Image (cartoon, rainbow, N blue to C red; front, side):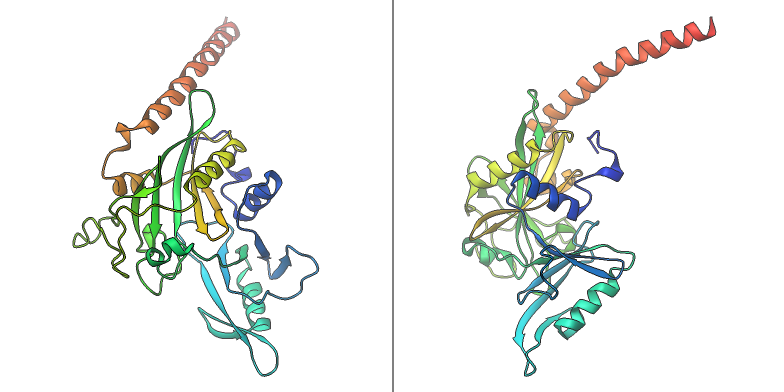
Amino acid sequence: MLSDVPRKHCILGNKDIFAAHCREFGLHAVEPVAIADDGHIMFSDTSLTRLPACDLFIKPARGSGGRGAERWRWQGKDMQGQDIYTGTAGRLAEVELRQRLAFRSNGRRTIIQRCLSNHPDIAQLAGHAVATVRMVTCLNEDGMPEITDAIFRMATRPDCIVDNIHAGGIGAPIDISCGQLGCASNLGVDAAHGRLRHHPGTNHVIEGVRLPFWNDVRALACAAHATLTSYVIVGWDIALTTAGPVLIEGNSGPCLDIMQRMADRPLGDGRLAHLLAHHLLQGRQSSIPNARRQCHHARAMTG
């Protein structure tokens, strides 16, 4: 991890701490409805005592790759006036879902969020999951965030609730100047897919599509990184909704292997490699005086 932040204090490694950070700096990010921890549910709005009547997305506070995520669809009220949700464990009343989430939070802090909806322009590419832009920013030679690479991630299976490539999704490279998609690919586990000009689930064209709110997406990623300049490089996950781009999370390990796979080129040929080499050289040069001081001190101690 290219950062001087100790892991135990890592803002990007803890989703509820990251949400609080975004709130503090006015970044448009997905807000947790509640946090479930050690058998208790703590609502962000302290006046609430029940889960909201809407679709809910549940995920571990710490984790990656979409592992442990659940989606619960709100189905309205039953004859007794109870809110009903359907999801991983079938059909549950609100009180039953709340009890389930509290019980499952023992030993695993959990985030409860309202489900986001994809912008209509990308709905045919997203399947039943929220599709996201993975945008990589790196501090440049002047210490300012610079966008170097981006891909658009899409779910392919109707039963998949996350767009992660490791969960069977696909990704398309994005022209960072204008937001236009290239041909998509997966991780290469199925050579039959090759390079995809159309979505394998909906047959909707991928290549050439321009993503909505592209300038706003770029601005959001750079603004977010500007609040966390202790990180040299960050991979941002950004959803595209009717209300504009929404920051989902930041990743100190931005999965550069996936970025290379989707772009079909080594990142060593691009701007990111030059910036990382710059920071490594800066770090090496700053460490030389320290090493010399330590050497002189050791000689003085030994006479």
